[in-house]
Structure formats: structure tokens, C-alpha cells
Amino acid sequence: MVKQWLWWGVGCVVAMCLFFIPTTLAEAHAYLQSSTPADQSAVDQAPKKVVLTFTEMIQNEYPSIIVRDSDGRRVEKGKAFINPENDHVVEVVLQDGLPADVYSAEWRVVSADGHPVSGVISFKVGKTNQSFAANSQSVASATSSWPSTAVKVILYIGFSLVSGVFLFFLALYKDTVTPRLRKRLARVLVVGLGQLIVGLLLFLPLQVHIYTGGNSWDVAAMGTLVKSSGIGHLWLVQMAGLLGLIVSFLLIFWKGSLEKIWLWLVPLSFFIVILFAKAMQGHAAGSPDKTIAIPMDFLHLVSASAWVGGIVVLFLLLPKQPEAKVAWNRFSPWAASFVGMIIVSGLLMSVMNLGSMAKLFTTEYGKVILLKIVLFLLMGALGLVHYLYMRQTGKMMSAKTVVAEFGIGLVILGVAAFLTNVQTPPPAPPEAFSQKVATDSGFVSLKVAPAIVGDNTFLVVFTDQDGQARTDFQKVTLTVIPSGNKKATEFEASKNSQNEYAASGLYLNATGRWEIKVHALTKDFSEIDESFTIKIKQ
Image (tube, rainbow, N blue to C red):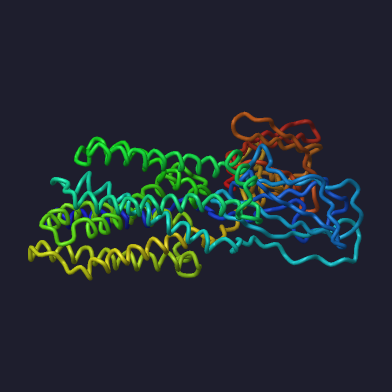
């Protein structure tokens, strides 16, 4: 008894500790962060291209930017493409010599987590009386949400049944496999593997619809997606893993080797490959720190599948059998372990995706998480009651309550599938960089706004020891150097009416650390040289 309570206690304590650890925000579903030209802006000269910068990586397949003038005529030249140096940026080249007018750029991209997002920006060129189009908004497409949720429910049920079978034979059942048990096992595996086959076969046409916005059953588009896209490659890995899983199960049954535990490790390895590939296709794929997000998503998927699947498989394979009580008692510490892992991984991913606790109660994504937590606690409470009842009375619980427990588990899987299609809250606005350093003759201050991937404004202020602004410079230059010893860019800043040396519209094309060197040459030919380090997150 003490040991079981210890499992539950450790899981809860670890979860509460992680719950309050600040973490990086993972903007699952991309948001438009900036554009060049800026939305609702006016430029004197026609730009050579439209550049859109997003908060996360954009899938390299089928990005679209359609630019039209006020009469609806298309003015882009060629197709939109991902910037080869920065996968957050999508560009399209414009026709030469665009006349004065208002132009709108309709865009549609697929974010790193596989969700389509679209919107529109508008800008004026030259002097025109035409009015702007509507403000830009990043809108996640809802056209494929319900089909996507349905496919994921099918997959999650299949994952749970197969996980339950593995748990049953590797940890819970130690007796002889009777012909009756063998027959029941075959039925469970047929249903579980059938769910995986149907789910994975439907996944590909669904992705074609998401990526192209067109016919789901376009065979040519399916072939292109499989050959050239990351998500297509992961689908191939899953299909290969599923084939290996089915073949290895058939060999185990054909040889009559169900009781040889080491043979189960072969299909288990194929199953792990399938689950890990699945973890690389969801919200975790859009995280700026995939090394944490993807393993946590994998751990969450494994734990939830094994917990729900263990309950279902025990109920189906050992209904009212003498061995059932022993197997259920063995399942209890495993269930407690799964609960702890679900809490830890789930809360960590939730905080990463939400960014703040307030959004748990004020956003749709947060409210779905709350529903999932309530269902999870209810299922965990039922499981704990079952365990305590069996330990105290030595009897099995009523089948109705066990059915209620795994029924809630199936609802949780459905909510989890729905959650993958709910748009996460938008990221917080970026904070401008500002730093002041001392020199031999006074101080140098540098401000970079908005400090994002995209266009930025650089302001340099020189002051003397008394805090008075200095303007006795004949030249002020700034050199920006990206991390990795990449090519540096040098530009000159001009003095404005506020006695600041400013440079506007300068493009930072990648996340990471940048070194900014400020060089000032005074009128008496003395020099000031200072370096600043800025971190661009998105």
C-alpha cells in the first residue's frame, strides 16, 4: 500500500514542480510576425518582392502568396518560396515598375506542426486615393479540423490497443497462454492494427488537402508529398514500421511463441518507431526547442496509450478469470507510473504552448486543456478506487465501473485529438533590445526594435559623463554579425532630430545571437568602438 501511494505522490510532486518552471513558448500554429512592406503601410517606390516572416518554421511545400492590385490583377512574378537562409520567411518576387496603387497580398502556408494558416496584408505604392484592404490576420484553416480529429482518434485507439497488448504480455501476464486467450488476443490485435492501417491510410489524403487546399485524392499530389516533404517522409517511416509490426506479430502467432518474451521486443521496436514519428508531426514540431518538445510529446503519447490500453486489454482478455486479480494488481504500479509521466509531460507541454497560466482560463486552447485535466483526474480517481477496493476486499470491481474508467480514457483520447487542431494563443509581442555601456568619454546606448526576424530600427545615442547628448561625429557605422561567423553587414546611421543616430528597415534574417559593433568617428578623428550582443528569438 505504501509503495503504491509513493508512486502517486512522486508523480504529483514532480508535476507540480515542473508546472511552475518557466519555459520557452512554442508557437504551435504559425502567426505572421512581420512583413515587408508592412501591413497598412505606404512606400514611395514599388518593392521588388513581398517578404513574410512567421513565428515558426514553415513547411517547404506549397507556400502561396498572391499579390493583386486594386482591380484584382495579379502582379507577382513566379511562385512563392521559402527563404533558403531562414525557414520562417516566405517570399514572392513582384513585377517590375508597379504603378501607384493599393496592393493586397493573400498568403497561405502550412506551419511546422502541419496546420494551414492564411491571411492578407495590404500596402500602398506612391500617391493614390485607393483605400486599404482589411487588416492582416493569421487564421488557422478549419476546413480539415474535424477530419483530422477523426483520423487522430482512430490512430489513438489503435495505439492504445496495441500498447495494451504489449503491456499485458511484457509485464502483467505470467501464466500459460490458453487457446481461448490466444483467440481473444488475436481479435484485439486485429482491431488495433486495423485502426492503425485505416488511420495511416487516411492520413495521407488528409495531408494533401491541408497542404494544397484541393482534392484530397489527387494521386500526383500524394506522390509529390511523399517524395519531397518532411511529413511525407515521416508517413513512409510509419508505414514501414506498421508493416514490420504486422509481419513480426504474424511470425509470433505462426510459431506459437506468445510466451517467449524476448520475441515481443521485435514488434515493440517497430511500434516505438511509429509512435516517435507521430510525435514529430504535431505541435512539438513547431517548438523552438524540439529536443525537449518532441520527447515530451512521445512520452505523453506512450503513457496515455499504455494506461488506457492496459485497462481495455485487461478487461477484454481476462473477464472474470482467476488470473485477473493478479494481473490488475500488477497493473497498478504501472498505471501510477503512467499517471506521473502523463502529468509531467502534459503540464510541461501545456505551459510551453500557452506561455502563461492566465491563458489556461482565457483561451479556447486553455479551456480544452482544462477539460482534459478534469477527465484525467476523474479517470485517475476511478483507477485509484479500483486498486484500493481490490487491496482491501480481495475482490474484483464491478465490470460497469471498469468500463466507465476506460470509457473516460477513450474520451480523453478524443479530446487530445481535438486539441491538436485547436489554435494555440498568439505569442507575446517581442520586446525591443536596449542596452547602455560605459566608454572612456561617456556612454553609448543601443536600441533595436522590435528585435525580431525581419525589419528592425537601430538607434544609437552617445552621451558624455554628465548625461548630455553628443553629436560631434562625422560618421557612425554599425556592423551586424550573425552567430556562426557568417557574413557581416555594415551600414551607416544618420543623426535625426532627437540627436539619435538611426538606421531603419534593416533586415535580420535568422534567429540566434547577433553581435552588433558600433563605430563612431568624431570630428577631431577620435574613435569610439563598442560591441553589443542581442538574441533574436523569433
